[in-house]
Amino acid sequence: MIPVMAETLEPEEWELWDTWMRAQRLLVRELDRGLQRDSGISKAEFSVLVTLWQAPGREMRVGELSESLDWEKSRVSHQLTRMENRGFVERTQSGAAGRRTGIGLTAKGRRVVQSAILGHAGNIRRYFLDSLTPEQTAAIRAWSEQMIDSVEPNCGEAGDGAA
Amino acid sequence: MIPVMAETLEPEEWELWDTWMRAQRLLVRELDRGLQRDSGISKAEFSVLVTLWQAPGREMRVGELSESLDWEKSRVSHQLTRMENRGFVERTQSGAAGRRTGIGLTAKGRRVVQSAILGHAGNIRRYFLDSLTPEQTAAIRAWSEQMIDSVEPNCGEAGDGAA
DNA sequence: CCGAAGGAGTTGACGCGTCAACTCTAGGCA
DNA sequence: TGCCTAGAGTTGACGCGTCAACTCCTTCGG
Image (cartoon, rainbow over all chains, first blue to last red; front, side, top):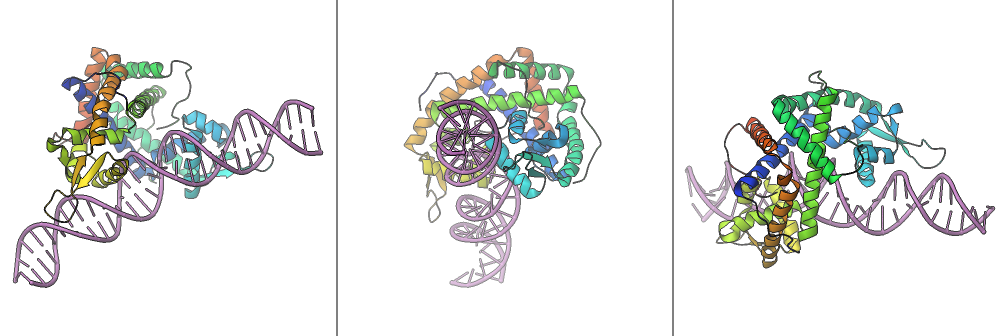
């Protein structure tokens, strides 16, 4: 509710911002649709499947998934519930007793993730990588690194794991 | 379910992709939080408020909002329902008879949007514009335009209206 | 005037994402 | 042994977003 700094953007600045946000939305939308069309899964499902697939033993705990994906634990939990209902993953009791604490891929999950990786990689190449000139690549890389450093000055790990 | 093209990405390609997506997520997250913190509204609410605010007469119909924001009509409708509940907008019967068909800002909506614009513009400048070198600006502009053209080969209008 | 067609807007169901509150288990310590 | 606290995981409520189905007005033809 409190105005902070009386700044405004020049029309050309605003246009740059708008154009860029718009391009991103379109790119993300295309990739999401590709995943849905080719493999029948969402981006969130893809991220989880790939992360589990890459895990040693193809078995992880919620906390590990959460850290690896940089998602909140509750988000992971909700996502796993949906994916368990769809039959992509299963919660197993890995610990000695009681709680179901391990997360593993089902046969269906393994089957889907392998085809999805190929299709998705192709789409990233078609829609993104192929459209970049070397200068654009360098600029985007540099800007991205600056941005990440400025927001997360510390450490260096944790990627989205997929998308 | 059908694998499409057996392509994969080189590690450096994948890393570029991952870094870029990550940077974007962080940027968007910061801006969303800024809007929430400074003005108590979400990005979606901001977009609607700004669009209505810029409209001649500060009154629009759902279809106009939908086109101007490039959102589905049902998305607009759901959003307006939430914002009506929060007291930011109101549905008025502008037409002669029957259906409530006009959308207008309330006094509260007008008050909030003005402060939000200033704060948000400042944040866009701080987090995005200030961090760009001229080469990066050019590269991002060029890439964005390519992207938009490739996905929407036709026309030229319709911006997000805000976010 | 009546009825069909079509467009505008809404609604419901569901997936995604966050926050806050809750439950359960494991481990420490008297 | 028995309590008790810390952390892992879950749940519920809610906002955002899409798709498909629905309602209601308008308009055009007879």
